[in-house]
Image (cartoon, rainbow, N blue to C red; front, side, top):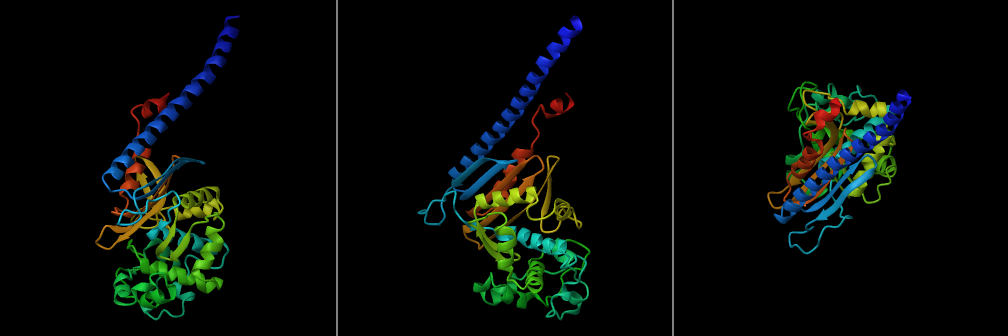
Length: 340
């Protein structure tokens, strides 16, 4: 009789304990979101946050809010539908496109870029730089900003024009040895996509990424970055990545593995903060004035997704990094709970 009584008591208490654990987790998550709301309000009050922030966990959006103004005259306020520059976040689209073509066996990661780009005449590039080097920024190529500034600045999204500037670049590092962030390398990847598909870079990405993600407010830029999107569209992109809509999960796992001496895979930055891993990209540009772009997109292993798009007082990684820190920091009782 005592045994049956104890068993009944155990069966009653166990679900209660599970519910209490769920409540405890929810309280901690609510606390983090409230801390984030306070932080964002403080930044906005200091005139240092102008854009849109979106936070989600698993399938749920937890925060989606617009701050500040679009222009320097402070006349047009940001809304949740604001389309803001993506800067280097566009490299994720280029890398995914290349991996889709690799999955279809149209190209190989170990192929020389010159196999598809006949116009490359520089022997050091033609005979050494492979697709995997371009993806992982180990090609030894540099950036094309100086050439673009000296040429036609109005052609920042003209792939054919930019390709003509970079195809015979002088290497600034040995091929395949160390990481060296290269916008020029991603221009070559964009041209490879065009050569093997017969589509423009823009059309390929729209068809195989944007439309698959149902991103209705996104404009594609150059393969190295650019274009515009909304925070809501980037949330759709994050969900599509997690659901395997763009690539097989095994293929995507390869993309978010370290490929060089720094934490960068194939088109994705890899981050470990407070012991929790994440992947994504940040990017930005500014011209010495207050107007610019700072974009941030990371999917964290604990289920959170962070999207920050800003276009004034740009601080690349600034707001996004702080939100990332709050969402991954350990609570005082985390260790106790993990041992219970």
